[in-house]
Amino acid sequence: AQKVTQAQTEISVVEKEDVTLDCVYETRDTTYYLFWYKQPPSGELVFLIRRNSFDEQNEISGRYSWNFQKSTSSFNFTITASQVVDSAVYFCALSEARQAGTALIFGKGTTLSVSS
Amino acid sequence: DADVTQTPRNRITKTGKRIMLECSQTKGHDRMYWYRQDPGLGLRLIYYSFDVKDINKGEISDGYSVSRQAQAKFSLSLESAIPNQTALYFCATSPSEHTDTQYFGPGTRLTVL
Image (cartoon, rainbow over all chains, first blue to last red):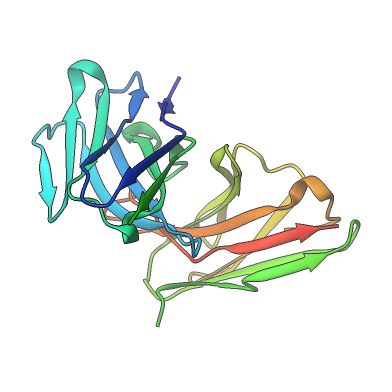
């Protein structure tokens, strides 16, 4: 069965700290896709990144970086030098290729609070 | 202008009322979805549509119905609203070339009293 676990329910940091959000997934497929979405206090869901199962290269985008490790079924998200504007709920999600175009399976989210 | 719009953005209604939530998109995507978000539960799929003639139930379709009026429009109806349908509802779309990636609208916050 497919499943996404975000064990950290809430994280609080002070500005400029680095923070890592954990995501562990379960799937029987060899081809799948992983995602991170950001939900700021305003409520919308913002797409951050898509990674397919054959691409284990880490990715960096500004202060954001993602570490994908198939060996541990993890797709962790790190924010470097956090800012107050990073305060949001972050969701990790999974889509199996054989069910592509159907449901995204979401984790329950991690609430990140960054204080000044 | 936003690519995926939802109306209304907020709605308060009473138990037993019929409610329709609307979603429109200018992305030209064929696939559209309705999810609901409940605190601490993440998002769960209600219905999805691959095109105007292809509509499918998701994980939690009971108590809901949908209508795909056109490629760009996908509506969600609650025939007889009940309090446990109080939630944040999201519409999403995905392109044919990357059907796995979904782009979400701003959400509709629905409260059923």
